[in-house]
Image 1 (cartoon, one colour):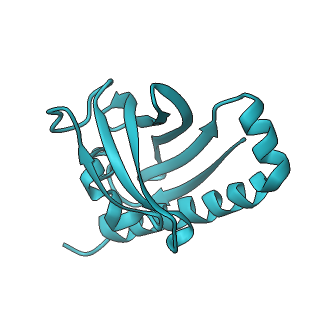
Image 2 (image 1 turned 45 degrees about the horizontal axis):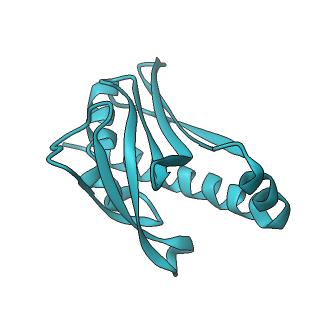
Image 3 (image 1 turned 30 degrees about the vertical axis):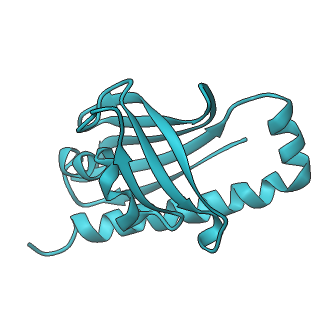
Amino acid sequence: MHASVTVHMNAPADEIWELISDVRNTGKFSPETFEAEWLDGATGPAVGAKFRGHVRRNEIGPVYWTTCRVTSCEPGRDFGFEVLLGDRAVNNWRYQLAPAGGGTDVTESFRMAEGIFTKIFGLLGGQLRKRRNVRDMTTTLNRIKAVVEAPA
């Protein structure tokens, strides 16, 4: 299961990337993840760095922590991470930034790991989750847009 959303922002890619790649900002933008922190001595984005996010599923609960690992980290262009269950990736999130029309097109996407769990989940309501993720990605990107386009 996967989906993506793209929103155009009238701001430079480097400025947007700085907000997105500092996971401590996540709670300002995400409807579900209300805080995040770097783990194991990490102080910023780098491939392999770990962080954890505090999630309120569907904005109401349950509330839980997820551990994540950065998988792509190219300033001004790309930031991605995988959500871990133990050492196994179960979901991958990614932000890709591309110059467009004097600003930046920002695409947020998710891709669940393939396997029997994903197939069963897809049959038992996964499409509801996909719709929710699309709605939340749109909200997240529009919240980022509001910040980067705000008058100085």
